[in-house]
Length: 442
Image (cartoon, rainbow, N blue to C red; front, side, top):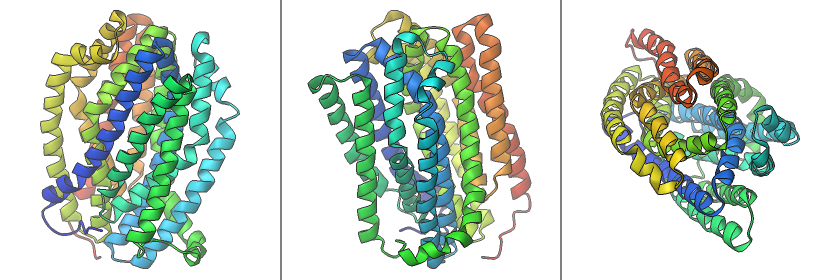
């Protein structure tokens, strides 16, 4: 466990972020390997099926993941306040809520997965594969959500390294299982989904065993479940708005996917390939945003507003520097990078356009992530919610209006415009919140 309420903010944030980057890099490298395996063995149609099926899952995963992170932030605030009994009560409450929410999501979306994919205009030739892929992932949503809670609690008490080890183990398992299901058992994309679920369950088991042995001081008991009712309001107040924020963003992405589907299998495959490459470029930004969640939560719990302000300044400096580097790489080398994973000339050309346009505006994404995470770590949910709604409206409107006019180019503009406009309420709220620059009583 590590206390983030003392010492140099920039050193702490970078130190805390590096393991998160390593973990996310492992996850994204697996995603790229997964893309390579599917693209080279099952073909463009299978890649498109995964792209169509995963869009709805991203909606539910974003919802559940951010809810779990919100619960973990309550735990982190208690740890910053040095209230270990509240840490255990918060952890216990988070576990119960995660199980309940995941069961509700499974009950609603597993029976309706095929209907939703049809409503999204998923091409008939890939509909069956997309439905199978999505359904298997939905059966594992409790494992995805629980792992994010465990990883969030570990990061909330200052341990950002351990989740990396679990991710390394499970991603290696995932790659092995991908090859086993596809090459040995001759499955289609359903084998890819099953490999992902098995690996995620493994992550959860590793976390439970590790926390109970390494950090018994934060591991809740049955006794702490009695505090569920008293803890419920505080957890839902932070967790549910965070889930809502991400879900409205993902609904916007589903509308964008609806427009992409109308452009055909080639466009779908191009976006899948481009987004997985783009995810690697974005990963350090998301990692820093994740670190700011817990850095802010601990310092807010300790009442140290000045340290939060210093941390934001340092993070924005890092984001700007890194963003400029990413812009140069994506603008110049997109075609070469895409060609590694896809051998279809049309797909390569479309994916290159996508990466070039979005890479040129990626700094705004970094600003959005840092400010949103900071406000959430302080328990402020209104501005991030407005930002999420703005991002949804902008991306959906851009796709619906521009795609019929300029075709695929309309898809490339959706995210950059959304990042710019969604940053506005975050900037305004952060400036107003920090204006006093006064530490709170711990």
